[in-house]
Image 1: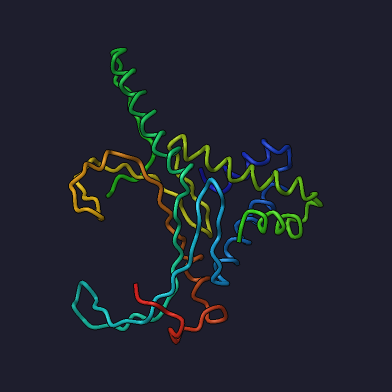
Image 2 (image 1 turned 90 degrees about the vertical axis):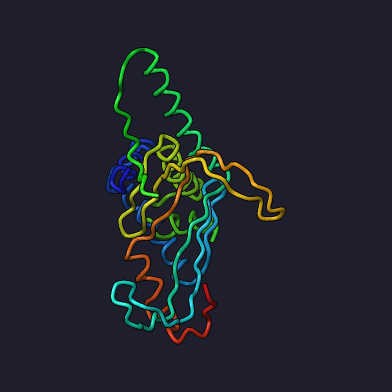
Length: 120
Length: 107
């Protein structure tokens, strides 16, 4: 789901024009970005929370060349998934596995692409 | 910031003349829609903010950090957030962040 798909979903769900839904969706993410910019955390019950962690400058190395570099102080955003969403997400895997099993029993060989990144 | 603050932002800034109740319903709709997509196993890409991605983890051996006892960590699907460059840059603009590192704590 992209932001424009989210906007379309909100327009349909809330009976708004796409233009109005876009203003609302942008307003929400702008407000969240601005809170993080102020160094404020965000807590959305049932969804998760965002925090900003400050890092001191440190001397690091370019891993490719081994050359010493100074990494400046920075702030990074982090997301911690809420309990309810964590469970929902894991259940989506269980449902996908069940779907595959049932389809397999029916003698099909479906291609299931859940679109997720499996690189870790 | 809580959901109530986001509702206030929609009420004040979304330009729709929404009531408090309508603003609250809209904010709920947004997070519900996102949750439903993730529950279907779909990732979410919000340009200018970040991506919510799902990753399938294999079963592996772990340890109870308190007791050191070995345990099996089951196969599972997890959600992680990858902040966009725009968000990362926004957090490090000098206007908002003293780059001297005075407030910094080590990783």
